[in-house]
Length: 457
Image 1: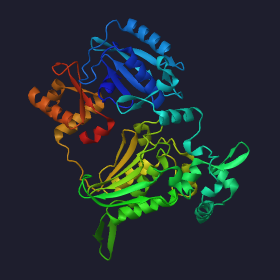
Image 2: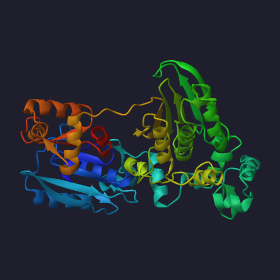
Image 3: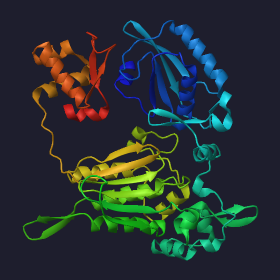
């Protein structure tokens, strides 16, 4: 377990602490992990070098930490605190589950003591984030909230009916209630935030940032605009308009067959549609001052929407097909209109399509409080693996780790050559070093992530 943790970098679900000299920081980290997506804190490791220094009197430290967490966090939270040995050192491993809170530091109060995880840092939750956590506790999505201050005429239900009819679906109050476009509020039937976002006649009056900003840049950075557009149409139609903008600013490749000439887009249409749809469906419309952006460069397209992954969801889980809707009304309506298929299958389809076209694997990442999907137009050739890399891959699949001496014996070469080869794989991000410091004679190497394995196959 320790070697797996050491092979990773600090991030949304992992933090290293050298010691417990600052228990307040540990308390904040536990609160942030619980509120965001769960996580693990390892005490006894220097966070920058990942040198394993261990903790003294681990049992006493465990008891002290358990008391601090019980006294300082509300509502009551009981993380799993374990003592692990690694060589001649002991470590404390704090496993924090994600739970519906919001949890907060008792001394700082329910409004100011709520923390969330943003990358590898803990951030105090602002009013919008705090509101989202409280909605999560009430099992209510932002787009499900009723809007008693808005007249039903503000929603273009005629357009909603046309979209539904085109798919052979019935339209009317019953359907609108089922989808969540209408809700009851103190005996009245009123539109929801979802109805305004999807079919609002003047959506920007209530949600000024609920637009899609598209831009074509010259080259591979944001230095110079070539073209830009703001898409403000009803959300079900907005995705098509994003595709039109992208098609206008990307190439068509000609493929000459025996009898016919076939024109292929620079990017697979299915991939672009999926990325654009995900940006619309999963955007955080409760946040202000930021909007969904589509940036077209010479070598890639970036789809960036406000809001990271929904609370409780990690990137590995999303990559594995786990889905958690932030916007239930928008999601249900898009599915009813045939704009999305099975929940959680979008990323898998994008990966499969890019692989089928021989394109570089798309990148999925949380960038601050945003989520970004980057699609590349680079056609990749299958990597050529040397004999020594193949041998190392077999060895790591069997044992999980390798030392310099093991590698030298495996390759029948000198320690110096083995060390240089291992170092090159560390620099490429394929391997990670495990040890008590840079001069540790017993240092071992492991795969940094499961995604690194193909580079050694």
